[in-house]
Amino acid sequence: MSENCIFCKIVAGTIPAQVVYEDDQVLAFHDRAGRAPVHVLVIPKRHVASLDALTEAERGEAGYWLERIAHVARLLGVDQTGYRTIINTNAHGGQEVFHLHGHILGGKPIGPMVAR
Ligand code: AMP
Image 1: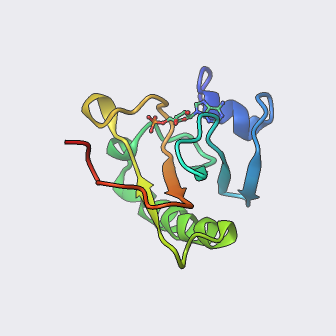
Image 2 (image 1 turned 120 degrees about the vertical axis):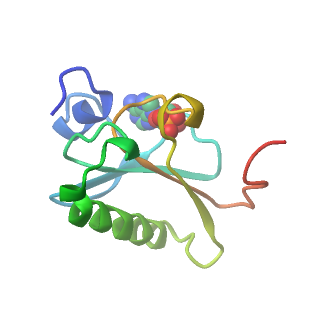
């Protein structure tokens, strides 16, 4: 747990969230500013600041987290229609919360990959 991390506080239950999936390693909850009919964040419970902060030792954990993103997308019913998974990293990636998370966006065509 990282002291001032909002997602660690969600994991700890001190900040509320609309949880859609939880196990011992991973938590998934609705984004509070949903940008699509389905917009869910999937995080490893253990604090990792960003994709860039992942280490070789965390490969197994990261692989599990990625597989759980697909699992959560199936739970949300967007697997057949499709969805976009986004991992924003550091400043140019637009990362706002420095606890690793994957966005699942779906429920409608999500549009171009990057705004032109
Ligand atoms: P990113 O730009 O990839 O770091 O995205 C962070 C996301 O976290 C944004 O889409 C926010 O709307 C979302 N967010 C921030 N705080 C909360 C919260 N307390 N509960 C749910 N979503 C949050």
